Amino acid sequence: MTNKTYFFILVLIAFVFALIGTIKPVDAQEAKKISVDQICESNMDEPMGGDNLYKDKMVQTSLEVNMVRKIHSLCHDAPEGTFTVEFVTKSDRVIQCFCNAPDQQSILETPKGSTINIQGTFKSMTASFFETESKQCTLTIQNCTFN
Image 1 (tube, rainbow, N blue to C red):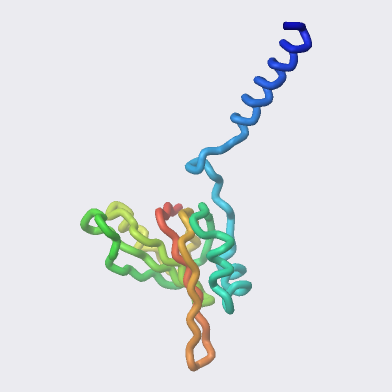
Image 2 (cartoon, rainbow, N blue to C red):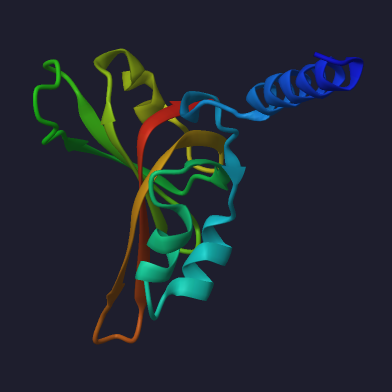
């Protein structure tokens, strides 16, 4: 083999290693920062639009809490004490963190007016319309972490 052949093989190997190094595993994906109000406003008439953009993607959001509600969990095969929490904002947006571990119960004590950061896997967006012409938008996020 000639020097050109060796050089070509070396460049090809370097390219392959460089390509492998730039591929991120699914677990390492960065959380996309989202605005709950913006998602709700732009997708209220067609909630599937929000699902199409973010479903099964890691998202991160900050919100000012107006109310915290605990819902007993319906998570299959989850440990006893697993719960779902809903955070309601001043603008009546609902962020539902689904299937939280029992050791995260302290999040239920979040005081009104506090800002909370939530990161997790986006599962769905739903919109509800009422006779009073009010609207409610709910984002469901799984595997939430709080800070």
